[in-house]
Amino acid sequence: MNEQTLNELKQALEQEKKILTEELKSFANPDKNVKGDWDARYQDMGNDWDANAQEVTEYATRVPLEHELETRLQEVNGAFEKITKNTYGLCEKCGAAIDIERLRANPSARTCIQHN
Image 1 (cartoon, rainbow, N blue to C red):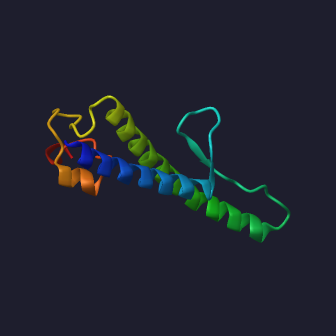
Image 2 (image 1 turned 90 degrees about the vertical axis):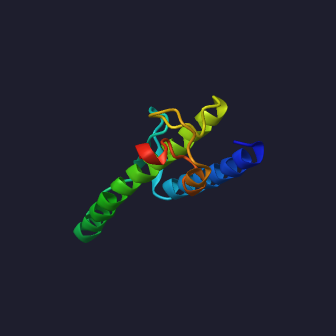
């Protein structure tokens, strides 16, 4: 992979990381004890049963979204680690180079199309 392509993919990863982080920050907080983990915020319950029910419903929606975004952010961070180790763009299963078009579509791809 040439330097220009690598820089293009790094920029895509940086943009995705920024978007994921901002979205997570809108409804979750980073876990202070577990690196890379986020926790969806949960409002304190009051005396209004309707408001409490609404909060529980919203929280139930936020938790799976938080998990999905957190997982995606971990994949992006993993791609940055691979760049540092000069293993970026190599299939984790067979070691072959991942097609550039696949990396452009998903810069944090971990496997070639055959091992997807």
